[in-house]
Every structure is written in structure tokens, then in C-alpha cells.
Length: 95
Image (cartoon, rainbow, N blue to C red):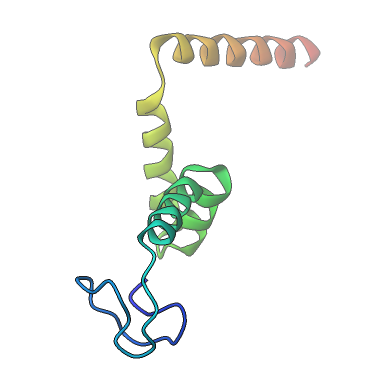
């Protein structure tokens, strides 16, 4: 937030009060807005927005998959392996 929320005047980060209208800048509102933006980027919806807004969608999808894969534990990898093997066995048995 580089502008005053009341009058829209450009603000200096060192000022505590707007020189135009005299209203005080709220640090708490800034911190909450930044935290909400960070949390939004961690959700599925935020990640999809990030992927769709990028120039190279394929590269962005690959980087997101790498981040997800890096975050998995050995138990998680094993669980995914078991799920895929089970689904594969069901599909093969039907065919």
C-alpha cells in the first residue's frame, strides 16, 4: 500500500501520518493485507491463478508439481504409489 487509504496521496514509508489529509497510516491493516495475500498464494485457487496468469503455463505447472513433490514425505510418496497401483489393477481387471 503505497498510497493513503483516505485521500490516495503517495506515501513515504517513514511517515506515520499523511501530509495531505492528516490521517494516520495503519500498519496493522498493511500487515493483515500482506498476510492474506501470502495465504491466498498457498491455496489451490491462488496457485491456479498464478499458473493461468503466467506467460509460460506449461513451465509454471511443472514448477508447481516440483514444489508439491518436494513437499511430500516418504509416507506420502508410498501412499500415492499404493493408490496408483490399486487404480491400475482395477482398470486392468476391467479390461
